[in-house]
Image (cartoon, rainbow, N blue to C red; front, side, top):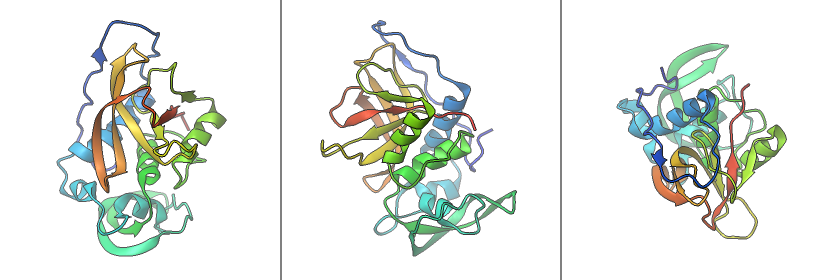
Length: 219
């Protein structure tokens, strides 16, 4: 059962192409993280579907989840209130409850990816509102993989440098990939992609914008 108030939807099977590089098997943890991200797009829950697009500029549910001081997982990163709300699971005083979450406004791709790590039961300590925190997390936990010699797995965070200036601009969650092919492609679900939660298809593992991948680690 997927936690985060979503309907259980299975992630599509990996596409198989002729093997050109060894690929580590998906982990149960990675599959769970990938399912959380995937189900944010394909849930049939009306409250979850409200989260698909931001309202106004950067006003979104996922930042609201992390920035709500009533949430035991409050991250203490500032974010402005923005007048929209919807239902979602939070922990308050150690009890999981289906409650109203007040949306907050800030760039939110990292808040979305951190949400997938969190409800997928991965360690999330060290992650924050910056996309670059996912590379730092990977380096610190020994699960950072620069592009070029690695086939991503389900549940990996993929980080991007859109401008090619060495600054990480964006992060998403890998949901499927071309198996055994470092020159292949992957699919991902990403928050704040064109102001919405998007299922992005067939990104090249070696795309100029891709910096690398971070695998989640257990708590």
